[in-house]
Image 1: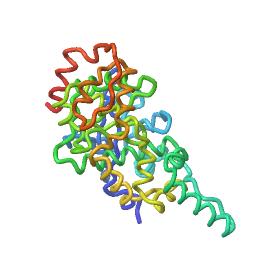
Image 2: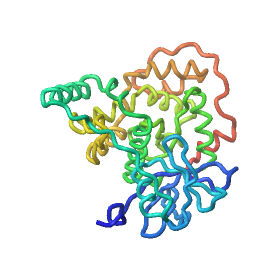
Image 3: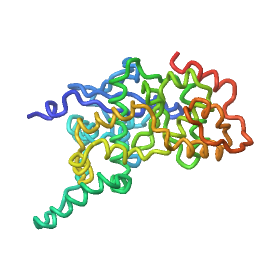
Image 4: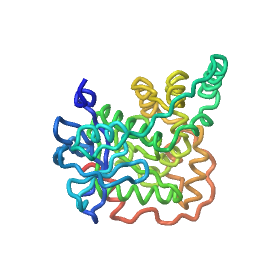
Length: 321
């Protein structure tokens, strides 16, 4: 099997920065025979990068930064391990770097190995939140990117990427979670409304953003932030797939598909009280969020601060134009 045959039809998400001062935009990177095809989230082509001319500038944590010129005027940042490995294998000589070693289970006596398997299965069934802490952050972010691609592929409408709407959502996320604001993405979720992905990406349904006031959007986002996305993925994957993931492998496409199904399901309102408390702590009026719940929790007294300015609210009213 040739290197190209091994990586045929490979796609990954990346961050494209067209100039050093330009904001990064999320793109879909497709591997071709001699090029990288860059598309926006609406599947519109943005350009081709010749593999023979790709320059590896360095790393940003778990991500790798590429450019077509040594001065790095235009950069492409990719976190997906398979895509990084493919570029290293197919680009010009000297670019390749050895792939990160995969974690492997040590060789253990049969009885000890059986005990480890039993404990891992029990962890994924009984305490997935504890098991989720064993997944490295870089691996969690990669799984979040794959889930996002699944949601984009399943959506009945193209995902939105209006810069003004995304900037308004960034401001909203900074109010909700100032220590680690999630990265908002507008992708059709249907009944799911909002979902937190491994790696701290937050998917919001464009119909929700368009129809609800920003305070209600903040409430659904706050409800999603009360979930542990990796624990949810392990629970959806099932014991065997979760065990493969915890051992440093891949949970498999079927397990990720089950996790994506859960993200589009109606939200669990059992933590609505915690979401209301998060809104109150951020000095966001929870009344508009609570008004959309079948059984609103008690509302605390809040002295709200303005959430968004008029321009930001207008951007959220039409996030897909």
